Image (cartoon, rainbow, N blue to C red; front, side, top):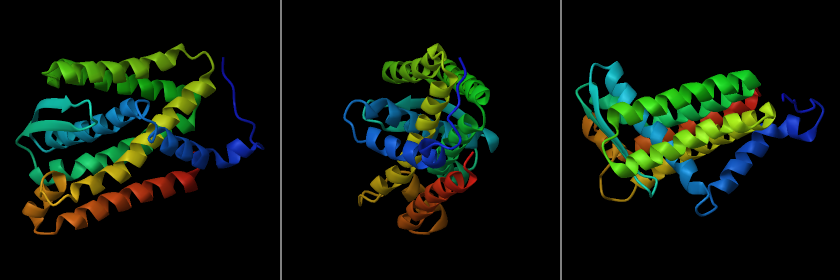
Length: 220
């Protein structure tokens, strides 16, 4: 069944901010927030991998951990772009997922199929450990279970919520790099460019904020 939000309703007018606030609240709920953080971690790591592939390198393996961390091991390619596009890619995915989910209810279904195919490809080609397999299987199940929703409005809203949580996590998570240990993507970019790690964290944060304002103004 297909349904629409009345165009004169309060929710229709402020739906982006309501969904964003709902996503922020969900990310603070223990246990319930874990798979949502796994989504952000997955799109962060696959962005590293895609950057490697697009610059002539390869993906060796992708790992996701129960605490929400992840690791993409690559070979070759542009070290700068691979390091940069982890957090930047998560921002991109968050915006694109929300955008496509908002454009049309059928487009939300099509994009969910694309996400499912990407997850399956990752499992088949780049997952090498049991923890990562289980986490990927959970994400794939969450993606496919939405197709059980008979009301396409609920399908659309659930995908919008996932896009919003990915975007919010991509804004928050770079700040964890400022821990004095000089590890992670920011430290890697600092070594490559000589710009301080904090500069890269601020750039990623700014990209995430721009993503929010883009979606808020576009009102897809």
